[in-house]
Structure formats: C-alpha cells, structure tokens
Amino acid sequence: MDITIRAAIKEDCPRMMELIKELAAYENAPEQVTVSFEHFTESGFGASPVWWAYVAEANGRVEGFALYYTRYSTWKGQRMYLEDIIVTEKMRGHGLGKMLMEKLITTAKEKSYSGMMWQVLDWNEPAINFYKKFKEVRFDSEWINCSIDF
Amino acid sequence: MDITIRAAIKEDCPRMMELIKELAAYENAPEQVTVSFEHFTESGFGASPVWWAYVAEANGRVEGFALYYTRYSTWKGQRMYLEDIIVTEKMRGHGLGKMLMEKLITTAKEKSYSGMMWQVLDWNEPAINFYKKFKEVRFDSEWINCSIDF
Image (cartoon, rainbow over the protein chains, first blue to last red):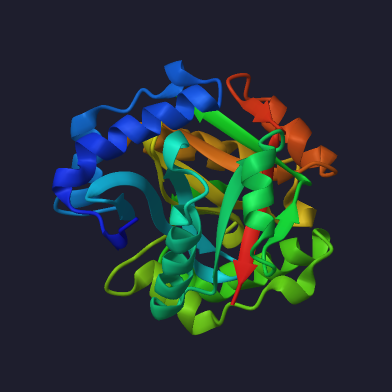
C-alpha cells in the first residue's frame, strides 16, 4: 500500500469533515458536531488560521488526519494540542496513525513547542493501547473537564 | 474595597508570573513551572500573541487574573480555553474570581466563541465548588489527559 503523510490543504476539508462525523458516531455523540463546514474551513485556511493538520493518504485517498492548535500553558509555555487523530475504520492496522503521530512529534519539535498533549475517553481502549505504544506518553486522569456552551 | 477588572498589559507580567508560581505550589507541583519569563511575555505581547488575560485589581494591586487562549474543537468550532484563573489566598471570598469569570463569559460571547472550557483537579474542592456557582457549567470526568514532554 502506498501511504503518504502531507500537510492538509483547503480542498481536503470536505473529506476531513466526513471523518470527524465518523469519529463522533464512534464516540456515541454524533449530534455533538455542531460546527459548520464554512467555520471549519475558515478557521483552518482563512486570514487567521487557528488550526493546522496533516492528512494520511492511502493509494491516493485521504483515510486519516491529525489536527492540532497551539496551546499556551502557564507552566510549560507553547505546546501542541492534538485535537483529533482519526483513521478510517477499514484502514486501521496499516500504520497510518503511527505515521501521523511521528509527523506531529517532529513538527512540535521543529516549532519549539515544549511538548504536546491531547485527551482520550477513558473507555476507548483501542485508542489508549495505541498511545501506549509511544513509551514517552504520560497519562493523567485526575483532571475534570468543565465547560459552558453558549 | 475597590475592585477593578481590566485587560492585562505587558507590565502586569512579573506579578502574573508570581501568581502562577503561587498556584503551582498550591497544586503541589512548584517544580513544574519551567516556562521562562521572556517566553511568557513574548507569547502574550509579542508579534503573534497566543494568550490573552484579564487582571483583577483590589485597591490598586493585582490580586488575581484569568488567562485564556483560542481552542479549536472539530465538533464545536472556536472556543475559549481558560488556562488559569487565580486569586491570591488572602483575597479569596471578595468576589474577584466571580467578576473575572463573568468578564470571560462576556468576552467569549463577544468573540463569537461557541463556549468556553477549562479543567480542574478532581481533589480541588474549593475550585469545584466555585465553578458550581455558575449553574450552566457542565463537569465531565471521563477524559484522560495524555502528554509528551520534550
């Protein structure tokens, strides 16, 4: 299989949105995806981008992506926040996720981030096992997420 | 007591850094503050700011602040991520925290964010009780934080 990791371009947005909805369904929350396609595209490729992404192509088709933004930690300074890493169900086990993670780590180092962070649902064992393959990952479950939706 | 909430300016950075270190000590992790003062200031007031903040002054002295950045959620779009909200120990109970939260909520709405989010340590009861005063806050403990430090 021919796998390529490359920076996402604006034309990838429709396919990325498809994968986002696939992941939300897997996480039992399809109704939670309320962002519009226009807002998504503008936030990544408009005048002031707030997210960046890599896509994984297998045989010329986008089968996964990783999307991140800059987090600011008052303890650690600028860090990469990995918002989403997704590989389509049928393409799992072919190394796309690992290649995306390795690309993210390289990019985070190049950007002089002090590290990277993300969250995983505590019942998502396949994802937790995937992250455990990277021996430098630390897991911390003593934080509670708080939110207000407008 | 004369309390004022205002946008942070570059000259507030030394005092803000003091408060960050006070909070880290309270959270039993003083050694975790590894960011340099220069990086902190540059990230807030340099050519490409990645954080913004409000300070709470009581009788002319900064006794608290709230610092946030723009988060991008693939489900909800742009949101306010409240990185830190701090009030000095001796000034707690005077309403500074509440005024800071109200200012953040107003700002997040003005910026057309879809909401705001933050994290709290599960053993930090005073903080959890403070957030519970805002009846629209949702708490979600099923996420695990993952991180890689470089």
